[in-house]
Image (cartoon, rainbow, N blue to C red):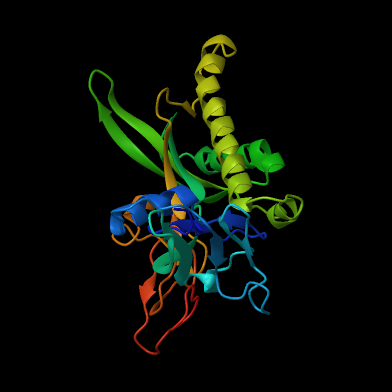
Length: 306
């Protein structure tokens, strides 16, 4: 027995910035379930295949395509297309002994959700020794450091955001009291011009921006690791303000586009994905959670306001 293929699980499909073709599931998965649901006590022979998915030539269904092998293709998938899908399978069986023909129908319902990969930002912290916390040169050094880092990653359309520093007096064993600068900043892939870069590609922009910010993170990490070598081999006298070896720390921060959020409970098969907000919820910014809307009733997926 064979028939049209539609998934029974809850697959997630990407709603990228550009149009995208996605396949729901393979015929093999449906055939397995069908055999378990309805086992005949006599031999079954395929005499006809009939794929049914509404009227695929009807206006409004142009985003749906059915292949010869029964694979359902959804193109240009958008947030609003998330929700419940129904697939009806028809087939005919024949009893070989009496040549009796019988037509059967099976209906399957499953959920499809739009999703995006999260946007990556990297939180970085480093430390520097300084002569004293009240030194005016601390602020000048910090401004110069920001400029160097931004120049280092500008070709990747990435930039440094939320930079800050604080000076603390640290008590170190065998060294007494030391003044140290604690510098923190984020490496973000959305520097001016990033949208123009995305318009030049024909695939998911999230992949490009995430790859660029990872490259920027690596460049910055390499820059700080080289400071130790430079101090040892290129300076006769160690500068008053200099990098503390092994103080580099980095943490990835995920964010979701408006209308999307993470949901570990509902979508635990893709806990790191930014999934379209369910009806009744919304996300107006780059938070990683969809908010519950209490003022109005939201009936659609991917709401960005309440």
